[in-house]
Structures are given as C-alpha cells and as structure tokens.
Image (cartoon, rainbow, N blue to C red; front, side, top):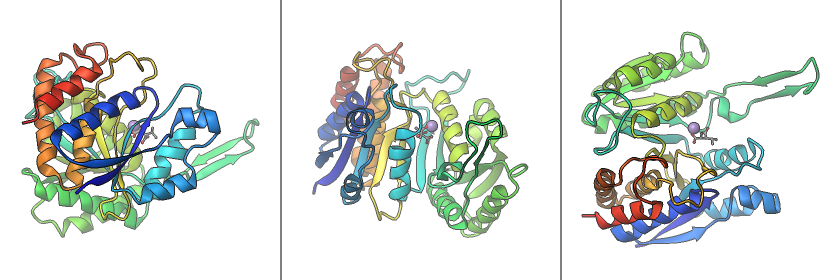
Length: 347
Ligand code: IPM
Ligand code: MN
C-alpha cells in the first residue's frame, strides 16, 4: 500500500532538508506517492497567492503533509504565518501540536551534567485556539489614540480534546506522568477553564500522575531539572515558547521535529521541523536535515509504520555520533551527507 503525501518544501533550506527526509523514507522502504505544492514566499512574491482554496481542498484528500519551511525576507511578517501555516492548522483542525523534547544519544545539551536519561519529554501544545485564534483588532490605527486588542480564545471542547490526547499519550509512556503548564495565577479565566477541564479529564486516567506548573516556573525547571517532565500539556502560545526552550536543551533547532495532528483523522496531519527557512544558509549545504528526517519518522509512526519510524530514529542516533555538531556552524557533514548517513545506517 502506498500513502499519498503532500510535500510543501517551501523556501530557503526547506527544499534541501525535505529532499533528505524523502531519501530516508525511500531507503526505509515505505512506499509513498508525493504531490508537490509550490507554496511559500516564492509563490507569494510571484503570484500574490498564499494558499488558494482549491489547493486547500486538494490537500484535504491526502494522507499526510510534510512541510520543510516557508518564509523569505521580502515577505512581510504574518502573511505566510497566518495565511499558510496557521490556516492549515485551523482549516484542517490540527488540534494537537506534538513536539518531542528528547535528547538523543550523540546529541549535546548546554545543560551541564545532563544526558539522555534526564531529557525525554513530549510537549502537547494546543494548536487551534488561544491568542493564535486571531481575535481582536485595531481602532484608530496609526493615530495617537490607537487601540489594539488581541484576545485569547479558549473553548471547553478545544482544551478538553487536547488534554485528553495528552492523558492518552502519558498513559502509554513508562513514567505515566502529565504536567499542565499555564498561568492560572494571572489568566484567571482561561486558566480556570483549563484547570477544571484538566481535573475533570484526570478522573478518567487514574494510572497517570499529574502536576501543575506555572509556565514561567516551567521555563526555570526545564533548565534546572528537566528530568521532572514526562508529558506536558499547554496552550498554544505557551507551547510555542516552551518548545523553543525545549529545542535548546535537546540538541538545538537542527533536531526539533513536530507533528500538527488531527488525531481523529478527519483531515491530513502536517509534519514539519520547528526551524524556519534560514535564508542566511540556504544553498550552502550546511542545514541540518535531521529535524525534517525526524518529522518524517513521526509521520510514518502516525501512519502506522511504527517499525520504519523506529529504524529511522535509531539511524539518526548513529548519524549523530559521526556528523560532529548539529548546527550549521558545527556540523562536519553536509546536508546531503547527513541524509546519506541516516539512510546507510537503517538496520
Ligand atoms: C512554530 C512557529 C509558528 C508558531 C509560526 C511560524 C507561525 O513559531 O511552529 O513554532 O508560532 O506556531
Ligand atoms: Mn515557534
């Protein structure tokens, strides 16, 4: 059987890292039919289009989407973020953003004295609501009396489905521990809804131990004692921030992978490295393709190809021990060589 996978390679280093991810999928023997979508900064600058409705409708019929990175310096902020990335997340109802924060053997952390046994968590970021929903607007923009509001949208349904997913995941992991991160001491409306929802859902998962940390404290703890975390569930903006910190402690953006999931499979899930298009190193062959390769492995796992996903993760571990550093400035191998290394080390 063959899967139909949409490829949004995008801009900058996007196409370079996606090529390596596709090389590895091919080498692991999972058959996919790819459908290329020319979307991102280049398309926007040449045609003014960001995500035409007809393209979105076509994407709805696919099994999954693999995205490299979008963005070029000439495109104003917000155009591609809201018009493409967030539109995909909202329109396809990709309500879980799954972001592993796992220090792989061979990767290095800036946290002194810490190793893979200390840093192995998964952040479940709510992906369709909060401040990202786009509530708010301007009054009298550009005048001395201007007003800007940007609210946070929190629904019981949105919080509950994400929290439930986090409990399901925690129940399957050896430690069975779930921490909610929020800011309930200040965000007394949204935080209250999240806390009550969390407590209600917790009653359905007696095998999972729970904790709560304010998100500012969680930033401190992720650095001082990352071993306290197993699964974290949090809102959209807190999750965005926490997972960049997570990337920093688990080998850097060159390794940070993510899945935007529609867990009920009513639409294709979108897998993408957390990093951006890095125009400064585009075309130099110095981009680390591992974040894209790990994202591809997460996609295979989601499709039910668990054995292939595990083989890729193991091969990534081997590649890490021979490629030198994991950033553009420390990597000893080129983008293509890293892809070759992973492909060659698939058991
Ligand atoms: C991420 C990115 C996006 C986000 C941007 C590019 C819209 O930072 O995937 O973490 O804020 O979610
Ligand atoms: Mn981010």
